[in-house]
Image 1: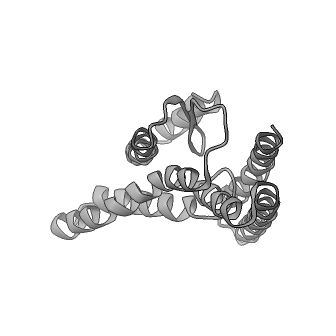
Image 2: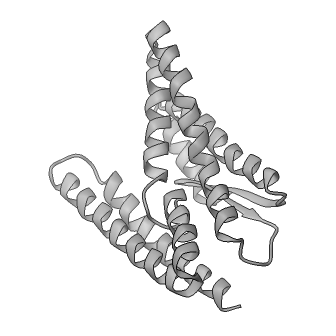
Length: 196
């Protein structure tokens, strides 16, 4: 568990947002189970699952870089689960009209959309990296994915700053900053993997 994760959970609980936290954690668990199930389907061993302030991070027990198709499938596992949850959550919302169902549907939809953004280390960034590696080769694919990832993260930071200036809070700008730093760290890891 990332050291900041308990602090963020405590902040939600102290702020009276326990229901939102619970729904987020359940959605995150389903999403990460999608990755774990795909790893098992591909015959990979999951070494570690870490919960971070903005989601989860799974490490597989493989010393080599995965082939592009396996990397793409592994990255898509989580978002596929989020997509599969949309119809039953929508049906449940229509049937019950429950605020909890609406909250669950909203959190799940946001997790799906955000994870499809082409920014490393998000699933969309990993999908883009696997596709670029398959199309252009490892070195060129990593350069292309890194450039697109940084551009997308900067756009998120810019949009978040505009939103904050209009009184909508700094959450999106903070996410943009996190994505820029995480993207840079992920790019360094990917480049080192490709050199080895």
